[in-house]
Image (cartoon, rainbow, N blue to C red; front, side, top):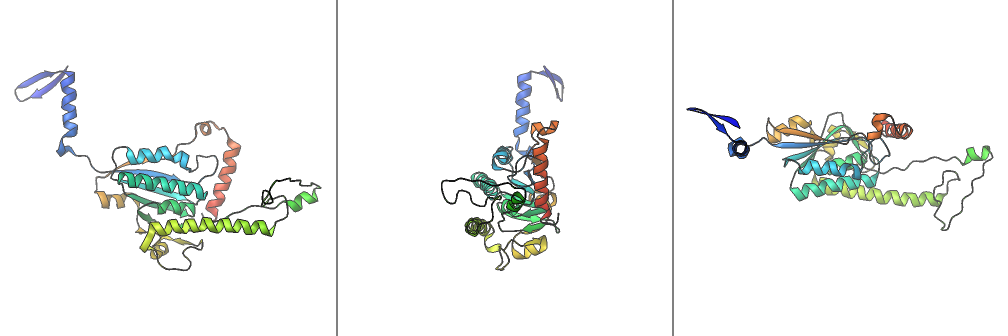
Length: 288
């Protein structure tokens, strides 16, 4: 039993009645809760193995919770990514748009150090993009990098033997001399991916984009120049911008990837170390 205080004394209230009274209080219209903004952190390279990198499979449950839990007034994306896999970038961006349109929830992107290449693809999935004045943005292009070790193998007296069914099966083998026909095939693939990237940015940014010959060359810019080109909507940070849109008392609920269980105990150190070097190299391309 619980006690309920009334003007003429103290009365006992049954647990069921107390529960009912609590429910009534929660649903009273004048006790309306302040707007909620779900904040999803997208940090790191996209689609790289290990270290809990960004991928559609890993982010799917995170995004589902962010868009559906608590009926948020908006979803804010905290982005700090140098890019990575074009396919994973596309899948993540498509999932964000699908949830936003299905539930009618606006999406705002807030760029930290960098949103370049695939990182900018994710930012373009938002309805508005905001950045710090020193953020690096752009790199709307595609890159493929590798190495050639055939000279080293020859010096060591190692002979490479490859057998295929299909003349293009062993394209760009790093242990054989570079074949100009293979390079030409690769460039066709890269140009097609680049066209997909341009279509995505053009569709999402629309009339905001300026007609500039360098816009889709893979060039990068700081935020103010990116704003002039229409790549972002302006300079702004997450909390003050969301307070400006939804009121001073707007609530925030954060979501993000958690470290894999095994990484907490020092397992898979070699793979994570290699992935870390590769990710560090991606950031280094933008001077970060």
